[in-house]
Image (cartoon, rainbow over all chains, first blue to last red; front, top):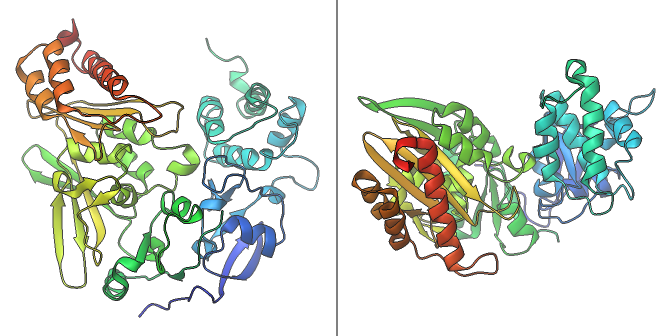
Length: 170
Length: 277
């Protein structure tokens, strides 16, 4: 018979967090977004609406961007989780982060970590610029910078990825 | 907000899920992709005693192509199959397009076929597709297995004819032998549909079903009959009689009727240019 973790008990969830095997001991109802911030103490993942609409909490699990606020911590047992802390290398910003910097794609920066994680996953999946601009960005709310600069940033980043398509075909 | 307290387990076999449901019955909630259940938990609209995570159950992630009769095929999805995998596996262009309208990519990547059919939001896409194609749902409990046709499955707003000790193991999505189409009007891309419409040509008949126009997905039988022998105007009039859309703060009833008629004209102009001319 399957072991049941009572609501008041904790259970161990072991997963790879930004390249390091990590075990968190939390109650089953703990959202991944909260476990990352309060238990793993990585604070780059932001929490906005907690109902999947805003996208601020987006992380990458097994190469796919998803909402950490719509993920129970035990669901990532045995999986590979990446947060914004993993994106920049030792030599500097990731090209997506650099493009957002260059195109002034953030003001307050609250939504930015989630957007970067979605774009990193899209790039890894081979998404073209149209999908990145029209669909991936659709899944994120930004209430101060606006989307014009974010769209420009995606164009910049994808220009580097697709050097043969510098000029959008008209 | 945060979920209320609940007990949790992640069984690995269908038999274990059945045993848990026998014991916990309707105090248990089944967690598939979590894109509907976890918001309901976070908003405290659901307070289950036990959450049964189906993510590790073996055998719920398979896709089979079955020939059920000459020229008639179905795609049988395990309940845990992601909708994006169904979009790739199903030959119907309208099915793939409907799935493309589910939420945002970050949500769609976690949405499961079994989850969206079990949640039975009347504004969701796949329930309408299943209604139009006469798909079916196969359920398992500790003591029985049964298959329910789509028309007998959707019972009301967010409610189905599932018994509390049953759970979905697979969903059959038939393959029409002609072209298929999905169209939708929503306030923003990724929002639930004001009206969504699936149209397919299948063995010399038309199949039409809509989302967002009633407590369940609605099969537009009168419209299907009118398309078979009448003009497009007659089909629009028949569609009007098939529907009794709700008034709510997103759109009035007449507005939804108007969208439905426009979607039908759009569908037919793309599927049969001759009919629209």
